[in-house]
Image 1 (cartoon, rainbow, N blue to C red):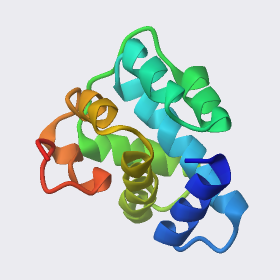
Image 2 (cartoon, rainbow, N blue to C red; image 1 turned 45 degrees about the horizontal axis):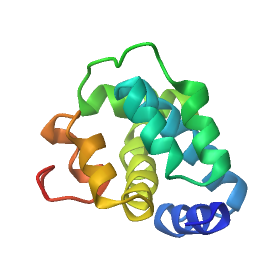
Image 3 (cartoon, rainbow, N blue to C red; image 1 turned 180 degrees about the vertical axis):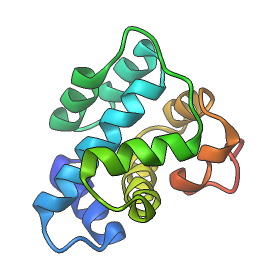
Length: 130
């Protein structure tokens, strides 16, 4: 998937009025995700995303993954985007469902295998075993 197509899907799913808003939300959600998964998985995921998004992931990579639940993930997304906490699940889902469409099934499984089952919803899955 190309960068513009990725952002267009995020814009549509998130119902953002401008592509710039979709880009900002995408970058912030991916940055939070990069801190939640292992550094090696960040690299693998980055290699399957369009260049600018891969760079966002690489730039946000930590030396080791942090461990926290979905509510903390949403709180961090809201903090980074400057949005109300109630909109963070919407923003996360717009980006993560697009991410799920953009990468191989194997790569997606590798990412979600590192997350608790509460992360299923923003990835558009009934559960993380899907």
